Image (cartoon, rainbow, N blue to C red; front, side, top):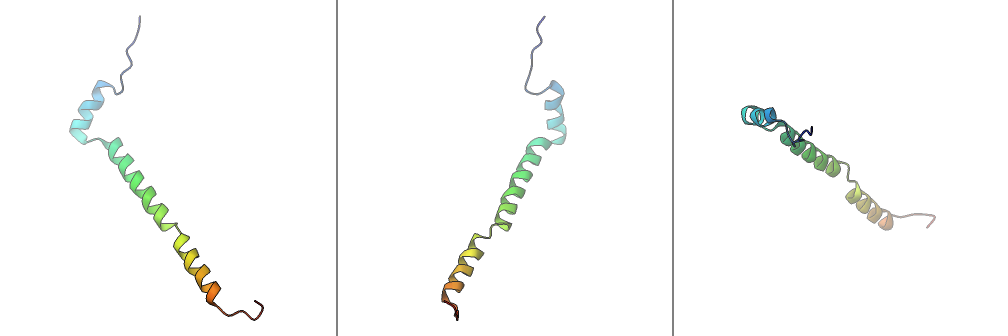
Length: 62
């Protein structure tokens, strides 16, 4: 006796037709949120600008 394993149970297709593919939508929103978070937390341009100011600033000890 062998059981077939399908990717999605038969009820899944019907639910997707009725309600939309919530898993795919959730995945897309999560990926977009990750991209936005990466951009928001990217301080590389701030560090580059800060480094440039340090080189141009006056230092009595340097």
